[in-house]
Length: 305
Image (cartoon, rainbow, N blue to C red; front, side, top):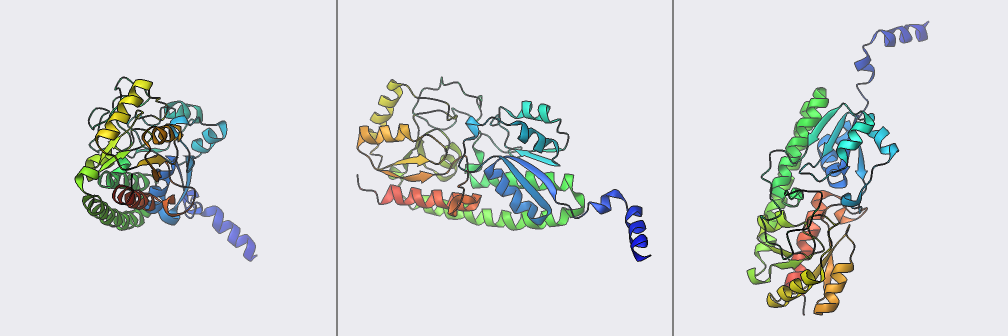
């Protein structure tokens, strides 16, 4: 008798009530956005990142399984600024009709020519003129968090207050992070704030924290420098007395190793630009940015040429 009454009660409930405790299904384009969404969503969300940690979003090709995953999601979070050139096709293949969040919406975007680079601007890549790596400026990343918060609230208004509280806590953490990075970079003599990395990903970081980044390749990791561009960069490195070179975790290290051989400079370590680490300190966005700042400070102030 009690079992029958309980069943009748459950059948009488609205469908939404039965699903109230189910987490919101969120798909992000890459791992950095997945961590941001996790910070804002907390226990109310279940997140799938299409591009895994330590993987290159520039070389990503979605699978049929990932299309099915997206088709069942409630929220899709992607960077925008033409970073995910494959996304339109994936959405069409998946018949996705949920909430879409463009994480970079509302930021002041750089273009390929806005910040200094020492390679030919005629490289063609999937980004067009926009530099998509805006998350590498923590002040711009705060707008990412606001956009993610608003998207989660749109999809799940019943938990709006939780998303707002989580976002406020996270935004406060990012504000402190931004100030710490500014102080760390300002402590490096200006003449020593010259960094060479695999590809042109750190324009936003450079603009925000007054660090000059040089790269032999373009905005996309698919760009390959010519011999003339490499020779020109080597001359710039020597003229500017660059103290060290830096790798990136999701980019082929061959170019940097070649530069190290040509210039005799040490490789100071690995920076994280377009993907989180699979484990360790750089497995979160905050940890990644703190790792980058600490490595840059150490590499530019203590490396002996």
